[in-house]
Length: 274
Length: 274
Image 1 (cartoon, rainbow over the protein chains, first blue to last red):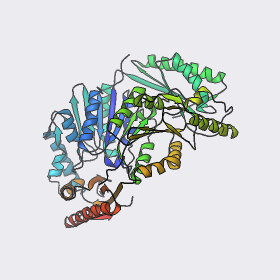
Image 2: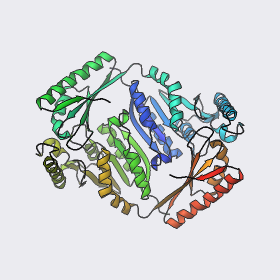
Image 3: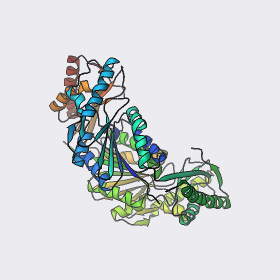
């Protein structure tokens, strides 16, 4: 069975940890990555502190995660320090990148034409966004001004995306998704879910335990969606492997046993619309 | 100057990393903790894998964070393993806790009275929620059935909250907030924000740089809120210290310089309503 490609996300920004901004980027990326067959194993939020970002990148590299995505901290101001941290963590110092500079330059010319900015001149602050870790490639930003950055580090790929959700989504859909599809091509992930109308989750526990025991390759998770007289418990069965048929077979077989046991215990079941 | 109390959050659950569920608990907790003077320095999401949860708890303890909050994984089913992980990470094995058992028992009796569950008997699955790490204290859950758990580990306090947002909020407001207020009593955090109507963030960069340099105790962060002809850049100034007056003084002085420089550069400024 092919292992799923392991992905980690590092969200950078004081505003996240102060609670000023709800991080929706991580959830959005998790959904997309799961959808194309990758597996996000861990996601972390850190402050705009270089040594803290460095520590997170290093430990993700040490865990051997194949794809490491950072979000935030690519902008022109002094508190945007993600690429400095990437440079320090990987030993690839920042260098002015010709192609990145051209992207930034073109972007500001477009913005000036639309009168979004006055002077399109490449000031130091704007040039800052074109300093990339040695060996990195810039990725055009269809919405904002800071290019995203891709850097190969040994067997891992490190991708730095801007934190503004529209920019992150634009770059992902335009450029990143096709790259990831290729990376993840060998693995297949599927999940199916049912809703059990059980008195409470504790009633289900012994039933789930038996199914888990009989189907070790299927991950089974239960989660109460309401509490009260109308309890709904969402039971998710998921598995991953080489091919669609194999994975579907494993899940179907576990699901069949689960439904039989729930029927025997007189627990009503619905299909989950999700 | 008193250091702010350092807080870390560990959110547990495959559903978070699959992207099925947007984690709003972390943001809610960050807001609350910032509001009472604590400082969330890091937040992580991990899967329902015991060794991964253990690793996160251990590294938070090693960093000396005074408060470590876990969310999720306290329920009756086999995939709820947070307390097992706490036990392993701290070397405090799980033991049936008399008071916790009484809480769970009372809860199921109430639920049976309301006809939310049929039989209130203490099954193995229900009893599981009363197995606490040695030395831990249970905290009543006003909404659900699993008590929260507080454990002192050296100079750190480890709090395990359920993942269902209503339960987490209920426990926080009823029991946790007063405890935290005492923990955080010595430190004071304040932030003020303004909105600059600048062409783009790169225009602000040199101005911010000067203010940052002149006011090292004030953290200054800028963030574009819109991109286009109506750009709004939110500039946040924050600081922490022993007393309200000292902290307010530091921020006011930096804010004054910032406003003067923005006026000189003919950049319009608004008060931020947040």
